Amino acid sequence: MDSALTNYKAVVAAQPPLDDGWFGPALAQTRQGDDEARRRILGSGLRLALAIAETMAPERTEIPFWDLVQEANGALTRALDQFTGSLADDFTAHADHDIRSHLRALSA
Image (cartoon, rainbow, N blue to C red; front, side, top):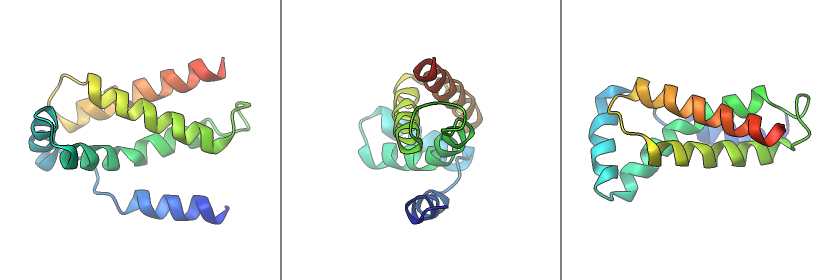
């Protein structure tokens, strides 16, 4: 594993996991324009985006790995912008679907 990936995984692992204890209030703050709450949600979602990008690593697509990570993170951001629910589990399922769909479309 290259050092950049090791470092990125450490940054991602340091983010709090998505959970309903803080997600609901952070989502409400995000919807009111709070950028810090938005960063917190997106930071927690990086683990999901990275895991999905890893499953579609260059062995399965012609897209370079770091481009997949960047596209997965962008899809995560769009998923948050479009999310209408209120629970962390619902957001995780929504984001998972959006990220996978986006990466599959790029790979087609």
